[in-house]
Length: 378
Image 1 (cartoon, rainbow, N blue to C red):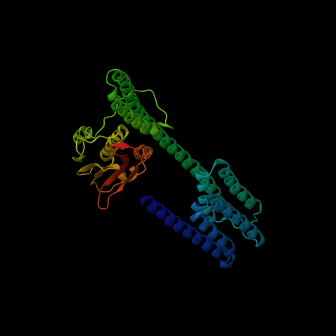
Image 2 (image 1 turned 90 degrees about the vertical axis):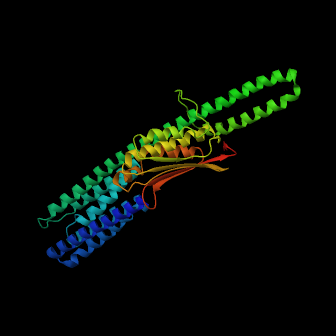
Image 3 (image 1 turned 45 degrees about the vertical axis):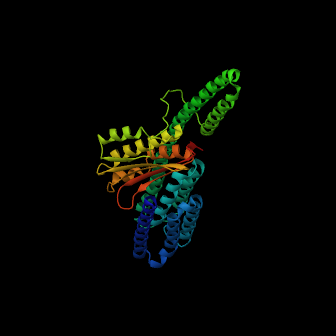
């Protein structure tokens, strides 16, 4: 929602800038050559500005169309003995189109479009006729617009690439950590299967009628191992050792107690102590609560309280961390943070969902749903 509002605000601001540039250009033409001479360049500038406003739908087509229209406007200006250089409004619109293309498109088409605009400027310069002294200032505007579009586009592209690389690193580390935990869980079940199989051999010699019970235990352990292994497929595992995950929510009270020493008071609501979750679900619930509480401490220092609610039904475990902090710029910057990326990657790897955002009145909420079935992960 907030991303959409920011995008709309940016579009409105850009439209206001275009209208101002078109108005200034129209007044300048009317004072120098007469209002009717503005129609050719002015109409072209309006069309290119509209293309710049709707560029997100089709960046390549919008940029190519803008350059073609600019070229046609230059040719028409040459025929009517008018200045051939693109006016400020068209220069601004072309800067938006080309800068957006340089930022978002693959390198080859982005470079072609940047070179295409430079070619249009060179053509306008070669087709120029002697005119008023104000033309040199317009050329400076066009050259500065081209340099600014390419420079800003490349800078934003670099920032986007770094952000994408960092996000991918977070996802990879989260997958590796989850894979390590699942590996430990599977190893635990396989060890139990081995022990039960050895015991079954001994029982078969003395009490053959009890072998069925041992085989049932082996079957259950095997089924649980297979469920966990489905999540290991496609993941890599590092070699660092970690303690095995527990099978319930009992570690959350320790985490909450530690947070209470340095943050706002936390109220914890968890199911009965006798619940048992798969290790990967337990560790995920713990990490979601830890990450959410950490973000409350970092981004919501004015919160008066935090509520951690963990619930379980036959099909899923839900965990929600909600605070009552008023909105602020620090919290607004968190909505795209890498901690949230890591939480979402972990939850989605387990087949669950995660939602994070502002609460209706005040505060922030992180809500995750992790699927289970009969106390086991699916």
